[in-house]
Image (cartoon, rainbow, N blue to C red; front, side, top):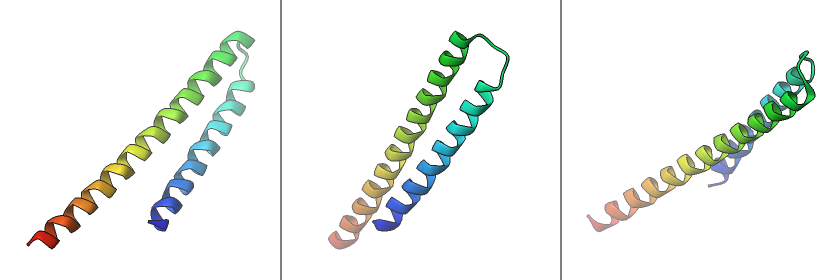
Length: 75
C-alpha cells in the first residue's frame, strides 16, 4: 500500500512540475492578460482531471487486487 502512495506522490509531483512549466510558458507569450489567465485556469483544470484519473485508476487496481484475494480464499 505504501508503494502506491509513493507512485501517487511521484506522479503528482510530475504533474505539478508540468503545470509550473506550462504556466511559465504562458507568462512568456505575447498574449492579452485575460487570455493568459484563462489558459492558466485551463491548465489547472487539466491537472485536476489527471489527478482524479490517477486516483480512480489506483482505486480500481486496489479493488481488483482485493477481489482476487477474496476469490482465492473462497477456492
